[in-house]
Image (tube, rainbow, N blue to C red; front, side, top):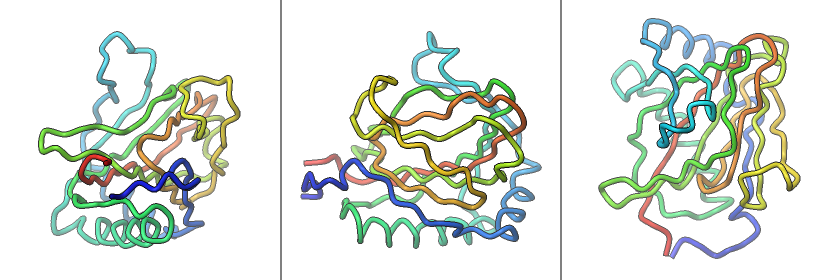
Length: 194
């Protein structure tokens, strides 16, 4: 049983500046040759719900260092904060860019896959300096509602900041007013909650 309904069930964990500029530059260079696609949602009627361009980083020999580093951080945070049962670290990492007016409205990442696993933790790594964009704020809502009626927590806009939070937690990226917000998003999975 991996649910104890402690207050941490709805709380994020932050690694402050875990990725340095050298590692961030390496990630950007890694993603440069990859093709962009438009970020989509499961519901085709919600085209205005999300405005971003994405690329996928798949596990291979040249990217394994990144997967290994993130796995270590996830394991540390999970052990000390949630204690979720995690069994799958193999999903690809999403590189995302939000340009002017780009956004992602309230949503959650919890997704059930065909192999009966569920996304348990979401990992967001900020790859842009705060000076590179205006707006584009990652907000988390621990009231478990997909609206702005309840107070949300705005994640600091800090280069290299790593946020880890339960995938069932509603979150959004506010509209970018100017510039380009770059980030990585990754999910780790486990068996359905009991």
